[in-house]
Picture 1: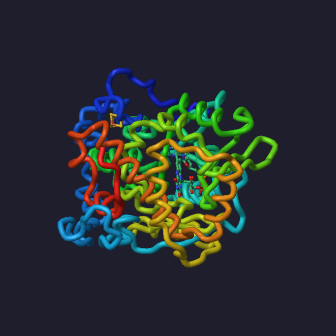
Picture 2: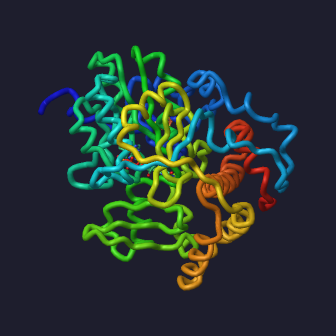
Picture 3: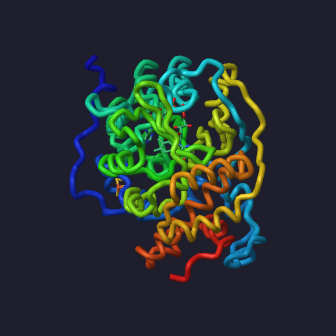
Length: 412
Ligand code: FAD
Ligand code: SF4
């Protein structure tokens, strides 16, 4: 009680968000690092290639075929590599905890690594996100100094979270070894100011992230989609092409993607997320998600040696399998582009039927991850082209352009 780690992050300063409506509230501008915003903000200065080189010693662009030799709009033969999709990596696994953490989003691999990093002394503090005492979906970023505080941060707060607002606390605490848990836009800004933080060692444990929302947007999503919005404890867009809502009484409600009310939901997602091309958190040392693994399993992407150190902390607690890749995504992605653009919503019985068929015969494992990346990148490319045409060329990284170029997009 009363320790520096429990101090709430500074109140948000209004009017200091140069990315304006594209701001993802990553928290950087709630600190004095706002002075670096023009260079650091993921939405003002897309610099993934340079930051990949800084972080991993190599970038996707050096590992991939040059853009001019690959891009042919609508060409299914465009050369797109796994590095284009998943970023720089050394290894990938499918895994789950043998003894899952109750109340975690999946099996709690992220929380376990955070706790172990503190108890083994690998780091002295962990930046993570607890929930507001009154509202389970409202994020409260903290600098955790004990495993109990990390455990209390388990489960997603599926709203924009100002994680970097605790950077000034990190500085004031004088700690030298830090673990930051966060999503792509937070980590891009963090990497851009990393050298100014005075740390001896920074570890970054990332999660993939897509379609995040403001707190008001989340309310609209829950009210539009769930049968009982007020009892939802957590939800996830799953690999079986359904949204799974877990309710307070433990029941799980499943709504097929194809039955979502696209017309109402089009403006729910934050503009930052509709213009993001860092789904897989390319600048983290280790990424823990689910989308490249079969249902019930987590997906681990080790990007570098620091990521391997993090994974080693919990390796003995995990059941693991090699990653798999089955089926073909491209026809489903191409059909989805038109359907989303025309805001088509299917009757629920047909949506259920389509969900069941695609689950059985559709893409699985890494191919499901490619399906999800393709669907979001094509949608986001169209969003940027329509709303921020002057930003298009610089803001869409070359690997994302190669991915998008595999599909026929509407002309306007
Ligand atoms: P837990 O042990 O439950 O720990 C969860 C961690 O997430 C906590 O340490 C907490 O600090 C952190 N956290 C919670 N809310 C936020 C937030 N808003 N911003 C930053 N950090 C937060 N994986 C995919 O494969 N595909 C996706 O599309 C995808 N979308 C995601 C969207 C969001 C907003 C978030 C936060 C995560 C997303 N993930 C996605 C990751 C996935 O849902 C799980 O978080 C991940 O697999 C870890 O599960 P776990 O049980 O190990 O986590
Ligand atoms: Fe500042 Fe982060 Fe918003 Fe960019 S996204 S304007 S860095 S708070």
